[in-house]
Image 1: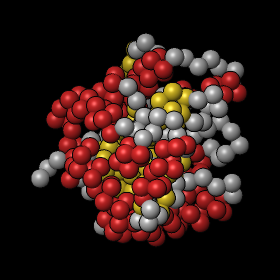
Image 2 (image 1 turned 135 degrees about the vertical axis):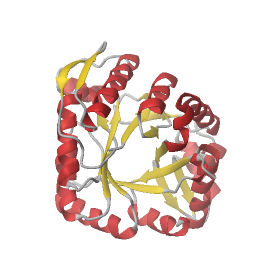
Image 3 (image 1 turned 90 degrees about the vertical axis):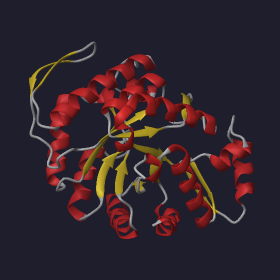
Length: 308
């Protein structure tokens, strides 16, 4: 049956290591373990800049794809970003995937002396950027006049692959609908208001919320629905024979999280490898989520083997 709920799984590993040699080692292990995509985040801190790291990892890997989860759109002009992305795509042999978000951490804006706009403005700017990037990555000349960007006769080298995928990390009906019409992958965040530390968020992991988000995406996508890929970043993988106890422990620590939500949400992976595999299969059947990213390669690798 041709439906998003029957799309084949892809698995991504989001990397974070203080030592470049550690990043390279994990990248090789991920490729050997059957992961499909190596992913890096984007934060203004003492971590590594994402695109140079991916260029380095492209040189030491052969098959695995390379992506960002996700770049802060506010920190990069889409024309300059398009040139960097297509360069990296050629350097990697057509393995790059571009993930973008609207930005959320006020401390990163403060570090550069820039004001952080309200979410509605940041999301609108992201939407315009996606449209500009899509055309540029496809090798088209772009003239664009929007509320946030004006681009005149811009053109960069086309990507090496025929269609370089764009992932949009989205939260909110308007940006979800736009992503459904223009992106290739939608990253479902399951997160709410940014907490004062700038890095953590309120969680919104109730399954009914995902039902609502996927309904918005499906309606806006129309004929594109079957080609869209839905992604989640698993926030915690815990291998245990006591799945319900693990859920109770997390629910006791995370405001607004119930035990049943913890057991059903695709943003957590709790239980034995077999139970987690069943959980991911259930999430694909219910929501069409088939692109699963996590930060723990050793915990997820046996799950990948079971599913495949």
